[in-house]
Structures are given as structure tokens and as C-alpha cells.
Image (cartoon, rainbow, N blue to C red; front, side, top):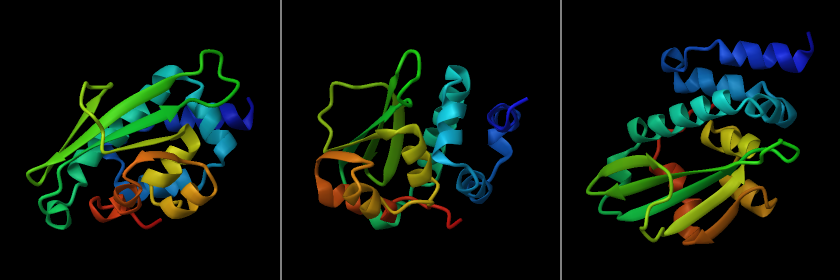
Length: 162
């Protein structure tokens, strides 16, 4: 059994609902981008991880700093190069009236900002393991629209400190 297979099996065996954001951040911190890409090659596991991350986004939203912010944020997460059927998964986070509502798929709404990145970079970003500014400067995340909103998104969510 290869190291990648055992890592994938270990992650696949997790009950994500029982993993705290801090534990998730430590798990992601311990994975290389190559390991994350290997895990994401399992389409079912990739979908499960993305669903859990985006479901947590609603729970980790901080309404006080958001104040009267009204914004549609579109996330585009692309599977690794070399994946047989390279897939882009889209989620949207709508922030309005102190509430964040996340939906899977692209709506007809016009996003105020769109963030696009690969699986590994996405998980490093949302787990607090990578600085959004650094990722932008290194071109690991592509931003379309309100760059200032994108730069400040971490103020609106309780992101763990790994």
C-alpha cells in the first residue's frame, strides 16, 4: 500500500462532522499539496470534503464584523491537473442581513467577487494554513471583481489558527 493510498484512506475514514475546525486545520497542515491532490482524485471523497467545508462556512460566519455587507461570493475549486476528468466545483456564499447562506452551484446572481483556485490551495486557505494575500501574490488564487472584499474575507469568518 502506498503512502498516498493510506493517507487517502485515513481521510476517507474521518467523520467530518466530528472534526473541529482546529483539528481540520491541523490535518490540512500535515498534508502536502501532492497528498491533497491525490485525495481529491477520489471524486466522491472530494465532493464530501467540499460539502463539509462549505457547510461550515455558514456556521463560522461572524455577523458583527460583516455589519450591513451585501455580497455574493463565488468560489470555483478546480481538481488537480492530471485528474482524468478535471472538474470545477462552484459554491456561492451570499452575505446579507448578517447571515451567510452557502449553496452549491452557480446562480444567476452577479458575484461581487469570484475566487478560483485548485483543491490544495483552497483547503490551505480555508483552514488558515495559508495567507490569502500571499496566495494572491503567488497567483495561487485568481480573483475577479472586488479585490478589497476578497482580501478582507477572513474578517467575516472564524478561521482556525493551526
